[in-house]
Length: 524
Image: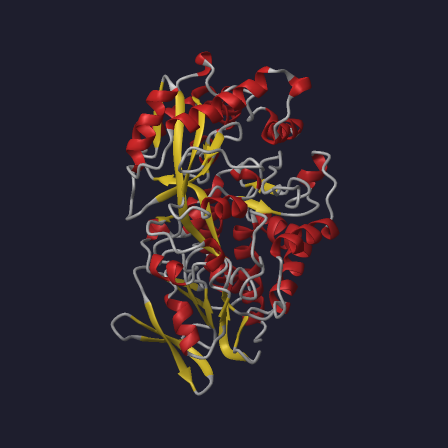
């Protein structure tokens, strides 16, 4: 019998197992995945980490503090009455992430790119006040490889892949093990659930779809790991655990169908061009506030879902796309993933023409043309719903281009003002086109991207106390049962509240995994 069973070999499970092993505990790590899939969604992730007052920030002249970051977090989270535990988890994460996430990862060989990115500024500057998105050098793959590599050297860890947990085993009120496919019972005095969220089960996503976003989309792209199906949430609930806020999700609007899908409904989250125009299904530009998805992901989803068709278009050109288009994830960032510094720096200076060509040729949500009439005809063919008004599209593009043509002293467009602000930060200057007109023949051909809803992460989950012990609805812990990572809503059943500041998901997995392990090791 092991000292602890960890259910799930994603990032949270790997961190939990490693910390337990280093505390001298024997660990049985279980996952349905194949050995090459270890790390779950983290392996596919871009690898950003939200941290506060770091050496990387200080070297870039960024003045940050726990107080400022907490203020930003609480404003975005919009916690409600009864959210005391998630709020406390959020405060602890902000306060401790630099040392207990960043420094701990560095101790295991993980490195971060020196320039800190500025994600989730907010529509009104109500997001991250300063850059906090620390990019892992090597993307999520390097993050997983370092932790998994360390774990594989520990003789007190047994790993079983291709193993599905079907049931928690109880002895009275205490969890004493798990039952797996085939009926085998595995015993341990502590069980840690680190099995991910609900994003891999689109039926559950639709069931808990937030009512303020209208009816659940008929078509949802899959951006989560397909084993994150909510099965362990249901089992914990069946055993008396409290599962909270499943209607709080971090789904994306800026997603397209994967050019080379590996599973059903396989989607990809884009980092879309900031200099492109976002239009609703009819071709009308969003206003009065222009929609720039990278400023506030949740706001972009809200605007998209105002229309029951739940998609929108972005219009740009090849020059803009080469400079600004990117994909969130390790697969389409080989220079970062493989730690090729020279190629990475060249991609910043020269853009990513190969990436643009790949998506134009292979992604069914990308269309290209030499003229606006030809482009709108192809756009209409992609959706086939008759919604697009070609004249409206041409009006919006010509109007925006005419504004730019008036010259800097006469610009009166909020998107242009935001582009100016982007170019003021050195982390964005080289990756943001210099006030480029859309229909400029010298910058063509034109490109249109149809973006839609993609399920990604769960902000709610299994409720835990600040020691990662799973709680009942009355607040009492279930002896022997713990939860970490996305399964626990990244802490307390939802430390993000209603919205995320980005980079807090991988960090939350590391943070909660370490806390769960420490509690188990201490016999808590």
